[in-house]
Structure formats: C-alpha cells, structure tokens
Length: 153
Ligand SMILES: [Zn+2]
Ligand SMILES: [Zn+2]
Image (cartoon, rainbow, N blue to C red; front, side, top):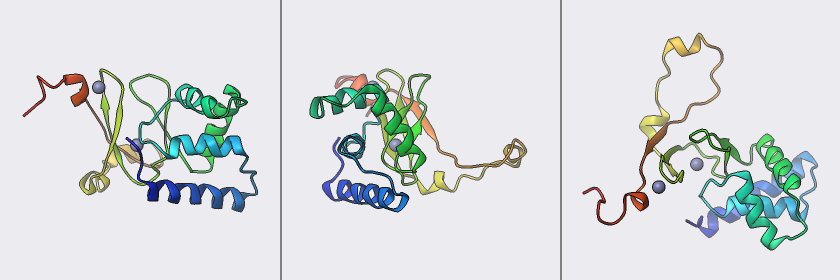
C-alpha cells in the first residue's frame, strides 16, 4: 500500500533535515533509496529495494544500496526488523508501532496499539541488561493468503 502523500513529504523533509544537520551529502542515489522505502509500507528487504531503485536509477550498485540502508538506519531514518529468519526488512515508519507478519508469504503490516506501547516489561528482563525498545510481532496468515473463500468471519 502506498503511504499518503503528506506522510511521504514529511519523511522526505526529515531526511533532508537530518542529512543537512549531520553534514552528509544527500546524493541523488541516496535520496532515491530513501524515497523507495518512504513511499511504501511493505517493509522490503535490501535486495527488493535494490531491484526497485535500479529500475529508476540504472547506475546504482547493489553495494551502494546496502551501504545506504545501513547508514539510513544509523541516522535513525529507517528501522530494520527481523522477520521469520529471512533477510532483514526495512521500515521508514519510525513512529512507535507493531507488526503483523504472515508466516506464508512473509508480508509485514504495521499496526498501532496504545495498550501494547504501554506493555510492562517484567523485572526479570531488566536483569538481562539495559532495555532499548520493545515491539510486538503478531504472526499469522494474512487474508490474501487465506483467500476469499476461507476468509475469517
Ligand atoms: Zn500472506
Ligand atoms: Zn513497520
């Protein structure tokens, strides 16, 4: 699904501000790689991002895409999330949210829940070390995989 235009503009604005503040060069290629992620909520992996960007920017290399994704993550502009043991998936939604993961097709969907945001982490977890963040990954089979016939009522 496409991200609303206003949200895309906001994300591109944050990208431009961050690069300016950090003195990084917002090259055309970096911009296009970020735009690819910012415009969709599909949580693609690095290879998918490369395949899509190279259609618009034939000069881009796989290496540039991988390195740019790592740097965008360092800048906090995108997030990386692990899904079902597959390759890491990238997410330009940096607001607090949780994921629904389809165990059949691997699609990842965002959802929001104040109740889950307020999830209290057990004391026993704090014994493991310092807690950075927590997010909930709900796994199941998406409606597209279930198919129109067997859709849950
Ligand atoms: Zn699915
Ligand atoms: Zn997400």
